[in-house]
Amino acid sequence: MFGFLRKKSEPDKKKSRTSADRGILVFENTAEVIQAENVLKKAGWQVRVMGPPPEIQSGCDLVIEFPLTAELNIVRELRKAGIPPLQTVPVTAPLLTPVSLFHTKDFGKYLMVRAANMKITVEKESLTIVNISGGGCPDVPFLAGQMVGKTLSESPRPGDLGHTLCGYALELAYQELCRKC
Image (cartoon, rainbow, N blue to C red; front, side):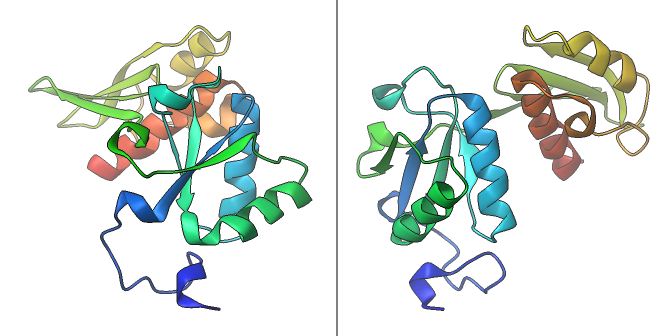
């Protein structure tokens, strides 16, 4: 495959990317973003879910950042899966840069990671989950009940239990917390 259409399984010699070689896929709703992310990652594309820049918000509070040089192949893959994006936007200006979904706060004894509207906090020494908060989805209390009081390694993954935007965001926060710890 051509170097500029590199998938995840192929080595990427260029580690630092400029915003000019990235694009944003905009979808009608969050469910489509989650489905598209799964389709693209399964096909081996290096994509990541981000928050949309204010200039292109269209109701959905998530976008997919992708390698712009692979736009035609990625859009073709999504159309084949029945999830075409509403638009693709090249990241050509600082105001069009997607925003990170993650925010980390160190409280000394505790570490909290927020992804979108969901927060997960662990006691740093034991890696025990001490709090889950945020969101307004009906599965948040259930997820908290299944996870709080367990260590990161003992806890079920929120993505295996939740089926809402909050469950998805909590899975992202959980993954980020696991990376940091």
